Image 1 (cartoon, rainbow, N blue to C red):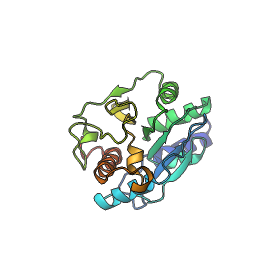
Image 2: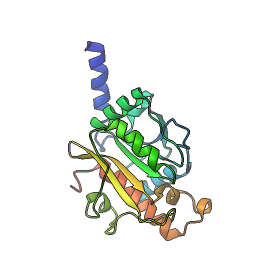
Image 3: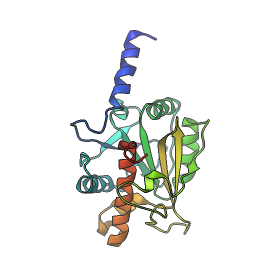
Image 4: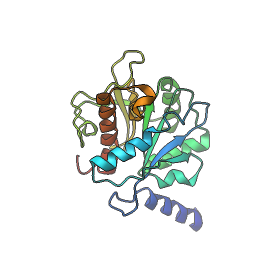
Length: 224
């Protein structure tokens, strides 16, 4: 390995392991993926979530989320990635390598099925982690008991197929690196009320659960 390449890797490792207590606002990144799926769905959701987290916790989140292309250096500048959509997801070979590196060195992804994402997301995630399986998290997992308690797991925002909402995870070295919300549609609950007409209690529950997900990743030692 050349000295220049080693230096670049060290900079990346330092960047994605910056503690939450640093002075700069934390950034939520919206993952832009290939394959034709609408990665841009629920355009106002992350801005609303950021504002809610700032109001309800001691965290400092930049209100405007950042669009993150997998091929861009920006991938290694955000601690928390969010992806959603209804259609197909595809990661090429280089993107698989970059995502694996990101996850193995401090990165985190929340994937939210906006109905229709499930099959292709599971397929592409298997390319990133061929040696791991998505496992359903028990309701006792700390992610459900951060700032807001969810003793029965994820809230149900939209009915879709009428199945119960489920939260799945991928773990690396004992750390949750991917959290996948299925049959839940949290992102729809983060949108403004007039977009989907969700009642206030549903929107509040969705924002509270989103806060738990972000807070758990940023401060995992607070609630082990």
